[in-house]
Each structure stands twice: as C-alpha cells, then as structure tokens.
Image (cartoon, rainbow, N blue to C red; front, side):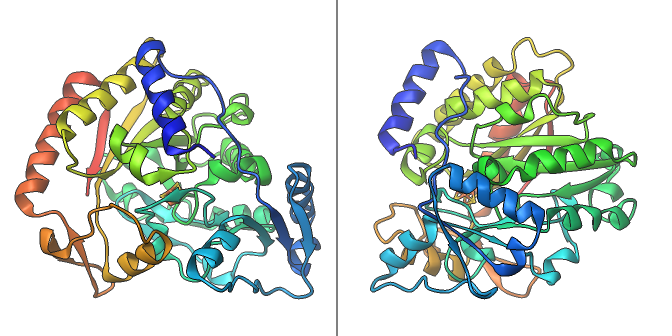
Length: 375
Ligand code: SF4
C-alpha cells in the first residue's frame, strides 16, 4: 500500500514528468475466506484461485456467516477485517436495485468494502459491521438481474441534460471495484456485459486506484464511464492511505481515455483546506495535462463537498482515533437527509465560494468538460 510519504514523493515527481503510466501496487489480503454457497459457484472458485495466487491464506468456512473479527481492541478488529478478503453470495436485498441520485438511475453491487484507509471514508456512513472486503460469487446472476431495469430509470434518464446517457447503473456505492479487480475480475466481466448489451445503458464506477491494464483492450463499446476520484495534494497525503497516488490515477485516466472509454473526475470530498484554491488549481492543471491530445475526449466532472453524519463520525473516530480530519459540528450547517436524519455540511457562504471557484476554474482549464452536479 502507498504510504503518505511515498504518495507525496510520487506527486512531486509527477509535477515534472506528467502522469505515471503504472498500475500501482496491488492489495494483497492476508487471508481469503469463502463460504460454502460461494464455493459452489464457478465464479466464486475462480476468485478463490486468484486470491490464493496472490499469496492469501485460504480458509473454507463451515457455514455462510462471516464471523471472528472481534479482537481485544477496536484497532486490532479493524486491522483483522481490513486484511481479509471474503468471497460470499450477495444478499438477496441487494439484488433489488435502488436509485442513486444524482449519480445514476440505479445502484448495483458487485462487492462490498474496500482495502484502502481513507479517513473520511463514505462507507462508514452506509455500511455496518466489520470493514471486511467481500466480493460476490454470483456475479453472472447479479448482471443478468440488471436487464429488467433498462428504460425504467428515474434519475439521469429523467434529466434533459443527461438522458442521452441511457439507463445508468452505478457499481461503486459500496466498494472501490478497481482496488480489488486483480482478485475479482468483476469489473472486466461487467464491462464486457455492458459492451454486449444492445440497449441504451451505461455502467459507471469511480476509483482511487490505477490498475487499469486488464481493462484497456476490452470491448466496452462506450457503455462504461470510469471516473477517477481525485483531490487536493494535502487531502490525498493526509487522509487517503492505501490508495494509488494522484499521478498514478491521472496516468490511468489517460490510458482509459486513449482506450476510448468515456471518462470522468469525481472531485471528492472537496475541503477548504489551507491554500485550497491553489491546491485545486494545481490538481485541475494536472488533469488538463493528463488529457492533452486525447481525440474525441468525453470528460465529465462530479463535485462533492465533504459531509458527515453523527453516525459516520463515530465510526471514523473509532477506526482513525488520531485523525486530523475536521469533524467539528460547530463549523458546519445541518442538512436534512432523505432518510429523516441529518448531515453536517459546509455553511452556505463557504459552499457558494467553493462552487464558483470550481465552475470557473474547470471552464478555464478543462473547457470541454461537462459538470454533472455539485453536492
Ligand atoms: Fe472508502 Fe473509497 Fe477510500 Fe475505499 S477508496 S477507503 S471506499 S473512500
């Protein structure tokens, strides 16, 4: 995994030599668990072979429950879960798709959990239990189950600005799918599936990793939009453990664009850190350099500010007790969520200032990019 200092060194080098064309370091779990139901499926067995080939200890579970992640301290439980890769069958509830505004018409799940260590991780607010990375052995069934949702979208399909994308399906709500692709092969399967699908449909996923080599030659037919999640240098350095460096992510963005994929930026979570204007200007300048000379560039931008809930704050402080992430409620404004709770967002003035900055800077540095939304 990239350490904060190695990431910093790469970023410094990148300023001189441009995006780095490498897949970055791959996650190697210490152990792989597989349930009996997952082991009975060919796709589950294929993932087990892949994980074993990366050196993981293989444990065949006696039943379909994942247990045994309690250790004497919260930090040890966290470390145990984060070094484990589990192969399971997806819960039936997850195969009934839900909308995911404003990103996509539908969210679907090929895995749950992530091997990285971002101290603001959005999964802290959406998933419960130990942060084990689980991949789903019934992937063919999950993909076939998407067919009946084509043409039934209510989010991007209803937007005048985005209806031309077709029915959109987001695969990275509960995971970073590229971070585990070397163990799952699930993105390659999904990209092929969408490439062969003759309806107006789009697969969408976002990532902080860079191992795109196995995806470059796939027959995607423009039906997959990959977005790279990027941030100011100090945010990446201070809060994004175990991810690819920004230079590697931008190198991967360029390689995917040259392979004909529609691409995107997820700039998130935006934070008004020290010198934020100059840091984000440098970032967008590096993006402009990364996409230089790409023919028929199709680039979108999604802008998401940092937010947290009382629940996600509690989980994150349990995982990262020494974090310097700004989680002061008194510096935020409360906003109601669609589930009847509330979240803490930046105050209106600060939001307005950041939004104008991004809209203007993107228009200047990336004039053909389309901003999809600000949140
Ligand atoms: Fe969480 Fe995304 Fe970071 Fe993974 S890469 S730890 S999912 S924020």
